[in-house]
Length: 414
Image 1 (cartoon, one colour):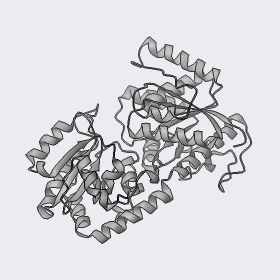
Image 2: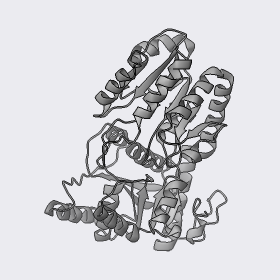
Image 3: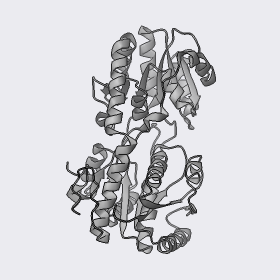
């Protein structure tokens, strides 16, 4: 860019969720370029990801805590936020989820922030009519909306959002985080994860949260379908074992379901996993059985970055991530029969599974790398800076002619 922008990234919290990780990751990437002056603010300071930003020696990470959008505290926090934006002369705010969309976009108006970028990261968000109305108000006040998949983009269009305002930027994956595991370390890793060390065991892994949705009783990630598929797989592959990683209040009910299905001895609930690279390295097949609300699954690209074949349900951007039949398989949500058949197929044919995994890794490097995520985000920022701040376009655009028109933004052609 021709001159530095004062960019504010507003995050909901620093918990280990997919949205939070992507927001923190993007902030680190932008800061590392040295091309911007990056600020960070949050609604809730809780969570381990905060340490990653504190390592950047940012001047401050101000907090704007909310208890509800319907009380006087929200007005007070908006006033504080507006003062913060004006004091630091913020040129551009980028927000990442429902709560930051509303607080950040409306607050940025008070702060006289000329460029406001909202986000949508799920295809089937559970919103009340009032919530949807207010969020759409934020979308209308934003200059752009970042969707993390074409599926999310099409959902927004179906809700009446202008196609010209939406830009697709896929989540980025740091492929260096996932490394091959030396055979000598396998047993050590299995013991650390609380898994059996029998060399003949074939591990099928699912990484997903087990939180209770606010909108109803069914879990977003649909672990019950995974467990029913596990029972079917064991009928053909008795040396299979199933690893369920993640945390949440629904875990006891899933453990009870595994017991009622008669697969408790072959199913391992390991909670939140700090050794994700090692877990994926000992896995033979990886699964995601989500039923709804996915935009672009971080679990799927982590599986692919680990060179593991994937079987996932056709939710959100799964078909944009997985090339069906080449890097894995895509099945309909709730179809435990077909899910099990594909897992069995991959467990029986090691060479095909290995080949699919390698093709998946190549696809992550080609389409979902950190470098691509950063480039597309910066190109969006530049287009908006040309439009809103009347800055000259950069000559370094990797071949993209950024002439100030929205159609020049990568991902906005479709």
